[in-house]
Amino acid sequence: MALLAGGHALLVGVPGLAKTLMIRSLAEAMELEFRRVQFTPDLVPSDITGAEVLDEDGTGHRQFRFVRGPIFANLVLADEVNRAPPRTQSALLEAMQEHRVTVAGATMPLPDPFFVLATQNPIEQEGTYPLPEAQLDRFLFDIRVGYPTAADEVAILRATTAGPATPIAPVIHGDEVRTLQQRVRAIVAPEPALEYAAALVRATRPDEGGLARVRQYVRWGAGPRAGQALILGAKAHALLNGRGAVSPADIRRVALPVLRHRVLTNYAAQAEGVEVAAIVEAVVREVPEPRSGIAP
Image 1 (tube, rainbow, N blue to C red):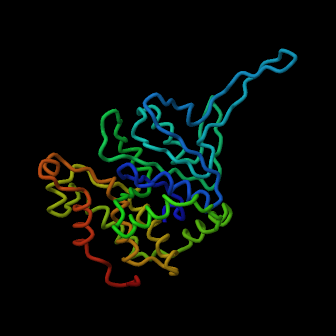
Image 2 (image 1 turned 60 degrees about the vertical axis):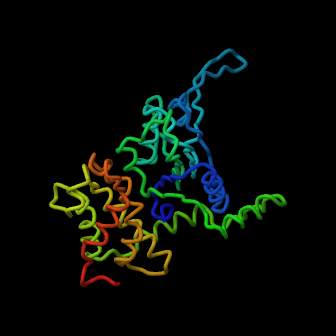
Image 3 (image 1 turned 90 degrees about the vertical axis):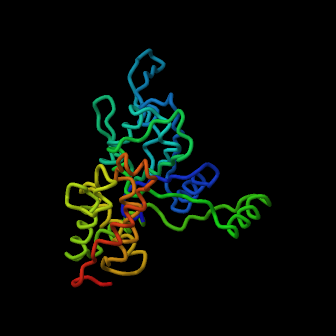
């Protein structure tokens, strides 16, 4: 849904859950140019965007030449993104929001389509730099990758400890991805759907007269970009289910990954162990759905 909606996604999960393998496999299946950036404390912005190097030809003439960094790809994996310092993390901001980078005074567009899929380890916090709220807001979805079921884990062991891995055959190309993104934008979002998405977002703000649970445990609620993400994610979900209009079920389906990283809890929530997911689920449960003008 994030790819079809033209957004970026943050994948959060413990090591060993094949987050990196999944993203690389996705790039192969979509026949997209793929680059991986391993974020480390010594990474600098030019390691992501690229840098100018001084070339000299056979005649002794020298000139600067720009060497593009790994950000110039269709699908960029920012592996363990919270291990890089804020200065390096900020190098992703313009690229994620504007789909372009500015280096040495020149602005260069990024390939189309362009996606950033970042991974983050939720349990190992030593030597990490938590992502600032401004950068978290650039991610359309916050996706939590959990442990597999018992049956799936047995299947993983069977498939990965025998012969060589089966090559992945492309099933879609970059031009087709762009076409699907245009179709997502063409999905109808009726006025009641827009009002429902806005009501969900506003209900996460304690100063908007929100729910009692929100006033008690939330420090800052989601901003307008969250409403945009709700509608785009819902449109992608509707398209994947063969429907031409957004329904409340589509909006509810994407509410948790859209709002989870945009709602900041206060000290009371941290002291009592109240998770953001529980607050978002309460908002979805208590905000009434539109009663007319929108399909169920």
